[in-house]
Amino acid sequence: MTGFRTLGALPEVEGWRGALVMAQDEAGRVLMQLRDDRHDIAAPGQWGMFGGGVEPQETLVEAAVREFREETGIWLSEDELAPLVRVPSHARPDGVLYVFHTDRSIAPRDVRLGEGAGFAFLTPAQLLRFEVIAPLRPLFAEMFD
Image (cartoon, rainbow, N blue to C red; front, side, top):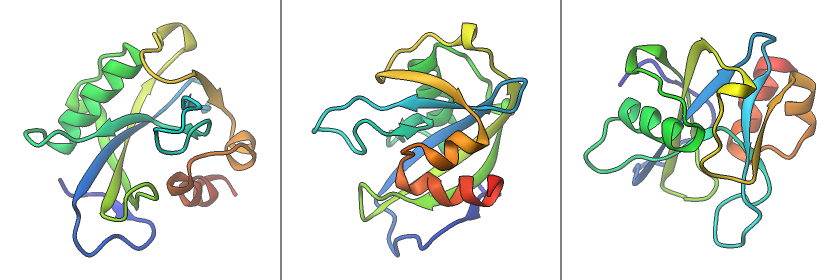
């Protein structure tokens, strides 16, 4: 899939891919997942977007739809997702995170948390101040700083 703008230095050989979804509410706040605070996962206790690893048989957009549904209970169609950016994963040296954006407005009542310690709709100021996973910080700095 084309259309992803690159932020940061990507690995020469891409061995792992993740697909994330940037969704917002009517006020423009960004839907974020508070990651579980466990030592066996990447970025424990930090804020990230909903999403996850791409399975071998999946396209990026299929993975984004599946992961978002599994983690939020919200069904998005592939047509509702547009490529936004790709950033290097800090958890895996061969990893790249592909971030999609949806224009569909999401409300707190729509979310049925399926993974993570919690969720919130964060303002631009909060995104710049809270402990957000490292790969997403340049995106939010560019968008809101």
